[in-house]
Every structure is written in C-alpha cells, then in structure tokens.
Image 1 (spheres, helix red, strand yellow):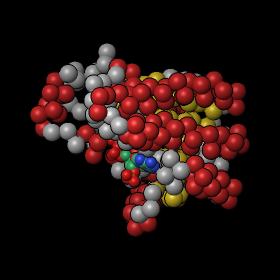
Image 2 (tube, helix red, strand yellow):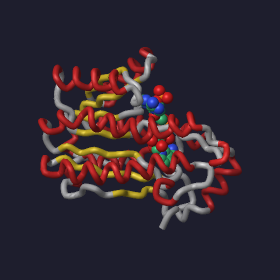
Image 3 (cartoon, protein in one colour):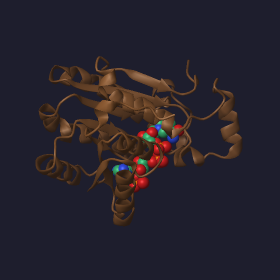
Length: 252
Ligand code: NDP
C-alpha cells in the first residue's frame, strides 16, 4: 500500500541516494504524488537519465544534480544553481549512506572516515548547503535516514552506528535552530529493509535476524517511503525533532 499526501504535489524535494533501494522508493512515491524530485548522482549520466525518465513516467518532475555528498564544493555549486534558477527546495531526505561491517579491532582509520564522511558529515553538509534556501521556502521538512543501530548499537558496526547516532543529535539541533522559520527536522531509524545493503547478508544471517523481529520479516522500501512521505507532508506539521523507528518491533 502506497500512502498519498495531496500537499506533496509540486513540492520540490531533494532525495540523496535515490538511485536505488530506499531512496529510489521514496523518489518514485514522491513522483507519483506529483512532486518535483531533485536527486543527486555521482557520474553515471546514462543511469541519471534513466532515473529522470522513470520519475517523470511515474507522474512527477525530476532533476538530476551531479555531486557526491562528500564533495562540499560540487554539492553547494549544484544546489545553489538549482535553487537560484529553478525553484527553492522545501523538502530534503538525507538518505545516501554506506555501511561496512567489521569488528572494531579491524576497522581501519580510512574506513571510519569514509563512513562518517558519507553518513554523518555528508548529511550535515547537504542540510547546511540548503539552509539559506530553506529560509525562503515554505513548510520545509527535512528527513534524515538513520538506523535502528544508531539507537541500540551493533557488534561489527561501530562506525556505522556512531554515524547514525550522530544524525539524531544533528536533527534535534536543526529542529531547535530552525523551528522559528517553520523548518522541521525528523529522523527515521529503519531496522532490516530489503535492499542491496541487506542483500549482502547470507540466507542464514537473514533467517537469524528475522527471528528477532517480532513481525517476523524484513521491511520493504515502500514501508519506509510511506513514513518518509508522511514526515515530508503537512500531515505531520506539528512534529519536529522526533526519531521514528520502523523495524517490525525489533527494538522495543
Ligand atoms: P543502498 O546501498 O541500496 O543505496 C545507497 C544509496 O546511497 C545509493 O544510491 C548510493 O549511490 C548512495 N550513496 C552512497 N554514498 C554516496 C555518496 N558519497 N554520495 C552520494 N550518494 C551516495 O542503501 P539502502 O537503500 O539500503 O539505504 C538507504 C539509507 O537507509 C542509508 O543511509 C542506510 O544507511 C539506511 N538504512 C538502511 C537499512 C536497510 O536495511 N537497508 C537499515 C537502516 C538504515 P550509488 O548508487 O551511486 O552508489
């Protein structure tokens, strides 16, 4: 079931990491509701064109901006150009992320840096790059894609969990700092969701993990997308600084 919110029609929303997985599902759902989806891509022009066409076919407008979330210069340039020449952006989904499962003992400094730079610093920089534009936009809503492990921790995911926990503190600070300008900021903490990220797990691990999920299964990208759309829309207009678990009851 795809949730639908009428005020998302024509809303201009940047979704990072929209090329696949959770981000793609969010982008498609927003497009189907008539939003103008702005997405970033890292260099594959053919894939970006394909995604743009797919989003337009779904019913929305779509614009691809070429930047990596760890490249502040390229990101600010692309975002500034879009907001000055096309339209202010009034929604942001900080979804781009990477994971690397390794015991703390084996985690290399450059692996720690790349996880923190992408998941935490990348989201902070995109939000900062858009903050001046947000002051001109209406009913701004920011959604940060954290993780259940940002709340509960996880063996072999020390850097990933730290990056995701950091997003929660960041979102609460943004919520407090920008509330007077009608900018809201909330966090989603997914549990196990079926995507490339979790496809990397072997079948036995998937079975074991499913046993500790009260609803007995991994979630779907559409389920995360429904919650994201709710938080982007005015249906959640009095909610800010909150953290939402979507994990089938895994962490109760
Ligand atoms: P995927 O691995 O399927 O997709 C990740 C997306 O992020 C890709 O589009 C990728 O782009 C993009 N990306 C990664 N690094 C960068 C970068 N430096 N700059 C720009 N884009 C980048 O991930 P999921 O869909 O599974 O996860 C999406 C988010 O949800 C992540 O933040 C993840 O941590 C979080 N999450 C996922 C869970 C799950 O079970 N799947 C559980 C909890 C949280 P490209 O295609 O170019 O590689």
